[in-house]
Amino acid sequence: MDGISTERALLAGSISPALEAAFRTVADADLGGGPKYAPTVMRALSRTVAARAYGKPMLELCHLLRVADAVGGRHGWPALFFGVQVARGPAFRALIQEGGRHCDAFDQDFRLESNGVTIAYPDAPFTVSYGRMGFLAALLELMVTALGYRAVDAEIRAWLDAPFEAQRAATHANALSRLFYDHLREHLSTAQSLRVFARLIAFLEASRGSGFGIDDLDDRAVMDYWYGTVTAGDDEATELRGFRMVTERVGMLRTALQAAFERHAIDTARSVGPDREAGEVDPGTVLALLEVHDEEADELRALQSEPAAAVKFLTRREVGELDLIARLGSHAGVLAVSVLRAATFGAVQSRLSQALRRHAPQAEVTGLIDLRECESYDQRLGQWRGLEGRLERMALAALAVLVEADRTEAALEVLARLPAADLSGLRDRLPSEADGSNVIALRPGGVVGMVAALADPKVVGPEVAGLIGDARKALRGVGRSGFGPEDRRSATAVNGMAAGAPLVRRLLVRLQHVRTAAEGRLSDDTFAQDTVRFRTGFRALYGGTA
Image (cartoon, rainbow, N blue to C red; front, side, top):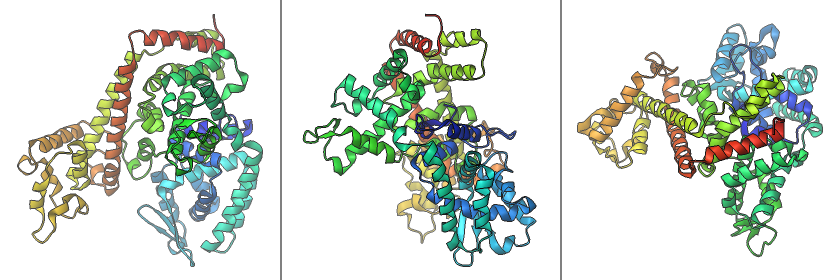
């Protein structure tokens, strides 16, 4: 799915070719430094557009346009939005700082803060964070691509020419929203975007009965729906031809059902069907929840946002390997075999789609259809074990940095790994007048050397001290950005470590859970059987020798 994941999938089947092309143009933007917009930004953008929830972002965008126009000089607002190679917070911060030096009125009207830029309106200041600028830039670029530069610039110019007052921003943000909404009205239908879920629910009702429940949304359901759809030649089900997409949709449906079961409005319902008196959830109710339900936050997205994004915890390849697991969240373990299938056969399907788009030689296409070079389950499970080791090293190295910086978040990480650890010895490091009843609640840097005592077995015991020793050893072997000696002197990097360490640790737990769950469900011939089914499915979808 080209790294755009679940939110982009929400648009499948309801997006016009023109809007699809606009999304792809923004997603594929590359000015020489790699993809301009991170997959997480594109997912957020897709979710926002699908829900038409761009009112607040438009207001933020208007304020950021004030900054862009000031620092852009004679080039105006486009200099900031289109001048960054990679749309990340640090890149915007650097351009704003440089542009501000050449703007006489900058210091009067704007203030550079540690986390963003404050526009000093006379009626009410407004701050735009660096972490939001990548998303706002993607939103603006999508509008320019879809609606045309002149139409968007005309509304922007009206705002920039208006008096310098915060209260006027809402009016112009609404004008931009109306402009975009009028365009989307012809290119995107929210009702149509839900039809794939209606088809999935209809399939489950037919195959599992009208009273199917969340436990029926499992690996078998994913495979049965995908295989039955592609081999039946159902032209109306083109939205769910990709195996990974089916896996994501089943995960989303599980999330919606779980939310439905927890809402008082449906009382004690535990299955899907028309009989409310029997405690069933009407299918229409589930579809409505799918439209409005806000997905659980995932660790991968948080790692790629400020402040954690200041540290390179993961490579681009590692992000790709973890993306589906992160998107499925708490449902990844239940769908562990589907995740494994998506990482192997689904990866081949992605390569196959790319080969067909670039009109690759028939021999190459046939080889992909026949799965001649498909990674085996044992190979992928081995790759996951290697990734687990790298995640553990990153989490441990971050812990070592936190200890080195005397940050109390280090103690929280220790307790997360060793819940029974006794850290009461740290109280001896407190001033006599301090209350040592809750050592962990101390503000970072409040007691110099207190956290460093985590490495002293006489203070915290051999198990905790051994963990810190392992963390320091891991740190010596990590050469990624943010972990170097010079980087670690930066408050930005240390803040990134504090935010990122628990996220990496939780990602590791998710990956381990998925791997062990998949291993427990595989038999000796699962891969051989799946190879036959995927080969048959690919031949039905893309042609090939029967």
